[in-house]
Image (tube, rainbow, N blue to C red; front, top):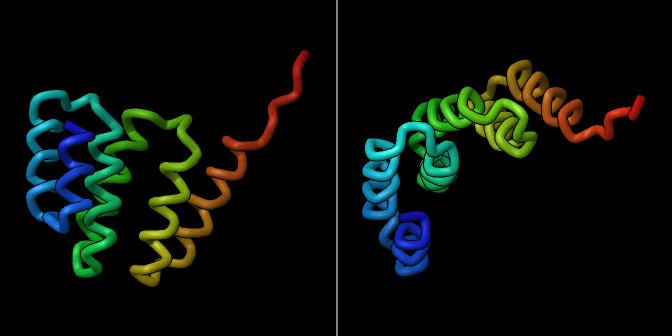
Length: 103
């Protein structure tokens, strides 16, 4: 379904791609990548920031160790004017991406 959504995006059919991802989420609610990709499409629409934030938060809940999800949500927070939340997400992404010392 991700490939199908990608093809729809390439053909300019973002609304249809969002519908495909929504169907994927209904079928597999643990599929965090579908939340991520749908959130990215909502960001492209510009007027759907709350939906993008919801999707990035859902993806983070399912995959809390994925640093790039915090970067995406931080970007969305920044676009919405919530600079303190953006900074928290960027800090979390930085901490997750930092190499961990071996014992």
